[in-house]
Length: 310
Image 1 (cartoon, rainbow, N blue to C red):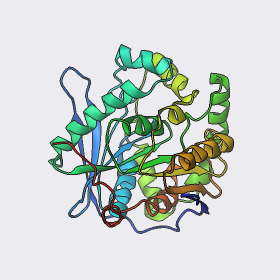
Image 2: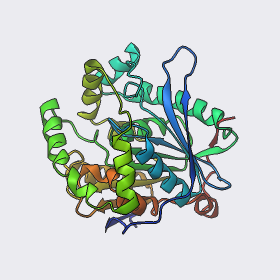
Image 3: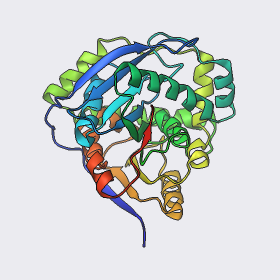
Image 4: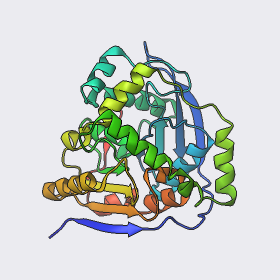
């Protein structure tokens, strides 16, 4: 029997504003550059979710709303840091990480992210909680897939994975431009307080990066690091915008088939009417977060509880 469920879903209609408190602080492991971190802590969190954001996404007030939504939907404390090399501080990637990215390998970049995430978790006083979930959007999917091989975590969610098929840098940029043209469709789903949160983010600082780091990340994204890196997860959500060019349907379907062959359960979802920028539709975020298992679901299903950072 097929262990995966395929479905097409609509963005939710103006969900209530999440009330979970989100903390912002700076993390700087020894001998490394500083990065901004966001931590969304629901009441009585039952574990941790590490989230890997996408390319050029600043951890501002708009991103904080999305993490609050994920925290409330799952009952997990959501911890995220800026991606090294893509931060408000503008520091470059370490040379060793850049070289791996140029060879289309995400492993050392993921290890670097995990070092920051562990420190952010300790600074928030949450390091006694087990890590139960890894989620990624776009570029962050490559990091989440690679990180899943370092952490024994029950739940993995890959939303709009890009590094799923071999293509030229020119083809990658053409797909990016096609999806940028669909950006207004995602923003049009936002109303009232959601639209205000987006406008607030526009007034906040964005991330900065070097041309050489941009090229290295593009090399990673033009390869197929996710199918090559992905072990058998205990449970995996896959999602793409139905109109996405950066996450092409044939490669996405092949990734779903790979999870079916591995016996990894979970939903494979298409978000109706949206392209790659679905993460900027709060209704899409709400719909996807509602398909993630809660901590109590995982316990009831007998899944292993996650990996402790202590």
